[in-house]
Image (tube, rainbow, N blue to C red; front, side):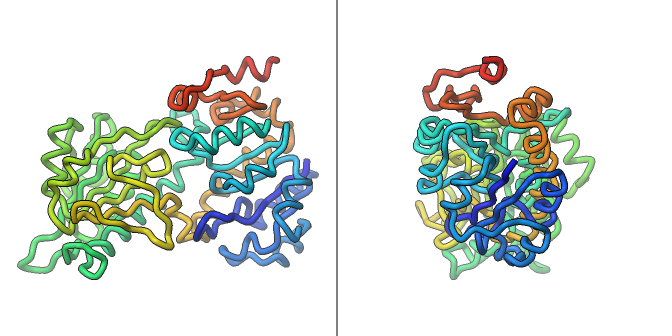
Length: 372
């Protein structure tokens, strides 16, 4: 199989779908790899690094898309990239389709076979290809929030840790999953007062076991969210419904009643965001203000720490890339129900139920698609 790695084109996205080490593994399995020139620059990997392990360098993305059997990326394909996809071509990347009807339509129309990192599962019910980026984004959310709280950024001028004689900032994390746990880890580390709001009692127990009395956990209700958000200096949104739009847990009215200069960081923005006032932003222009509340809603947060993020992502995607290349996509999907869970679009049909329901498509069971 010929595996293609184009350069990411989303604004300030520096990650790359495959590191030289990953490309070498694929080549070692008897496949070929073509990499767009400059694709790895953001992680310190030059064209020469890829050529040294046997990959071919292409001058343009068009060459990569035209020749490759499988495209391995990081972020969802942008409009120009989607136009280059073709019938039967495999796309393996993050997609986040539920809040993105335009992308979904283009992928359906392309006839490509689209496997989304974020819905691949594991034996424990987790999302192993999403987890490392959720870890990065959760940790980054505290860095970003601390910066936004500075007066020059529109914040209230609050230091997360406080100082002797001045109380630390109050950080409220909505969602105690991977994002929430890592946000709490960072916030506790700098000395903030941390509250995690969560619905799963086992998740709350695990947080208490890990962090002890340094974190307060509260069961998620509308009233709890309202009370805590109104007292918060920094609110982190880390709620996830796999493959579906994120629920809007902080309303526009609630935002209007928050303290001036407080900050919202919406890590769920890839799935539409969990604050009603959220809209996607970029690293080039990361924040905006609604009712004197600073919003940070960058849709590719881990792209800012591209080297760490790329290597963490490749650690978990490589086995699936190899399985698809070695077996062919249909057999790889049939052999692995966890990879099958990643199939979102197959040859013009939507094969992930939450996406179909959110966007009004007929849902086609992926098993029946492959059987046909």
